[in-house]
Amino acid sequence: MQAEAAPSANSRFATTLIDLLDTVRYRRVNAEQQLDPVYKLRYEAYRREEFIPVNSQQATRDSYDDASNCYCFGVYVDNKLVSSIRFHHVSSENRTSPSRTIWPEVLEPILDRGDSYIDPSRFTADHDASLALPALPYLTLRIVAMASEFFAVRYTISSVRAEHSAFYRRVFGSHRLADERFWGELQFPVCLYAADVPTIRNRVAERFPFFMSTPEEREALFGDDPDLRAVAPSARQAQRLELLERAG
Image: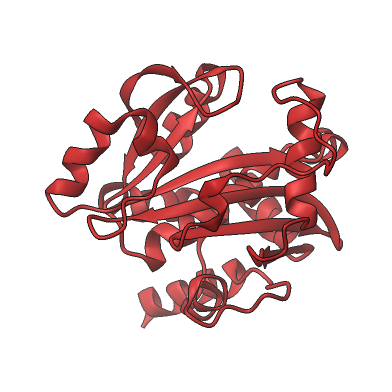
């Protein structure tokens, strides 16, 4: 009898992440709530590194948060806010995009030819949670992966610090588009990377099935009538449905 192959480290990691998702909830932020806990988390994260000055509200927002194509989320583990991220769905019809402001000569031609992209920004995390949960970037960026599928964009771009670029290359197959520049008021340079979504989607889902989701979860998070309560991840259901489709 042939011995069964031991599970790979990658498959064990994927299984662990799907199990961890059972404790995770995603909450879309109502932009009218100027002092939402997500904006306070941003402030605490940036002040910890002294990237921004002190302000009396102890919250960090900017004009991009009020854009019609902005989607902002808090990530909760066991009902505690542990991280946040926002993104803009950028198209030729709606070009509001923090990264486009920094690299217009790179991103404008993409829009001019009719392609669209997701532009994530303001990825911040609770300090203690980031130490306790090494997988926190995956749990948070799952939102971006879902958005890329929901909006059927050509690219997911990333404005990232140089020391974080290896993660985006390894996980999403991102490639560098532009040189380092400074992003908004933050006192550190970032590089521009892009992942070609149609090319990498299936490969990423196969390697990291915790990024998978059902249409119902995506609609609850990004649809015209979003659920502003906490939404449970559906990666386990989505993976089961895909396996059934392959078998049948």
